[in-house]
Image (cartoon, rainbow, N blue to C red; front, side):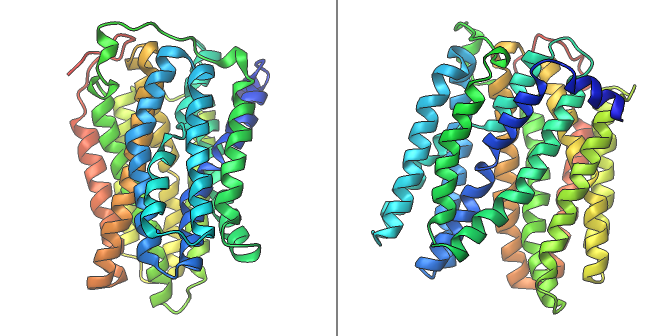
Length: 397
């Protein structure tokens, strides 16, 4: 394990990109939960908080692929500054409107353009591809990137919530907006890793969502996101039903820990198995562990199974990203990767919403069962993925 990661970090530019990429994605994990905490504290309405956060999420799902498409065409250094400025300004305006107790409609009006914030995971993975072009260490770099994402997801939400609770209600989103401006600027300083701009071609006028296997893998990422969104809600409800509400935090932390461990170990290996078969194995492990989640008799069982289930999350994401990297032209890479991230975001939002409805209607056990349904869907999608040869020339649907 240490050998492959040692080789990776001995490559010039790797340490700087890893640090800049991690700092740049940390505020992204703080925004939604910070907005929810801020509005629930000041407006005393979870429905309003959830609706505004959902507006931000849906806006990001629509706008971030377009930002990435422009980054492919004109370069990150030209596109990220204005996109980041618009998104951060909108987030700051949302904070100000809440502080001034402005009408509810102003919150939605500010949340919508905040979706212009660039997809940092896609930007950094495109940079890893540029830095390690043609080298066998790229899967290891993707694994490291996934682990850094898990660390950000472990640290970001508690930091945002804690600031809102301890300092003042707007503190979490405010820090996130300021940190976004600083961190994206730091990422753009990594000039040697920036992918070159690609001129407009007839093929590039269409969305990368039409490039195989992007739509199928984006749908697959949606099922993974649905599992994560379901777990977020179901773990809280299940722990509360067991009389141990504070245990939910440990349950979710173990899921993130499992994903981090899985990503590290996977990145240290070099499986000889074809990527499509490897993806199928990862999804089979996800479905099997989801069944154990649905059968959990108590919180201790659930926590242990969450650790086990997390082991397959990062590897599945790594394999999907590598499949896209091998299949699509370089001119469409950032946008293609963003569609996968968008799939996860929509899956998380949809999974959390469905789990909330199921839990209210039928109890926490029904919410946990949705994780199994999403896991089975992931397995079916992976099994149906065309066994097409992966090349640098994508085929349009």
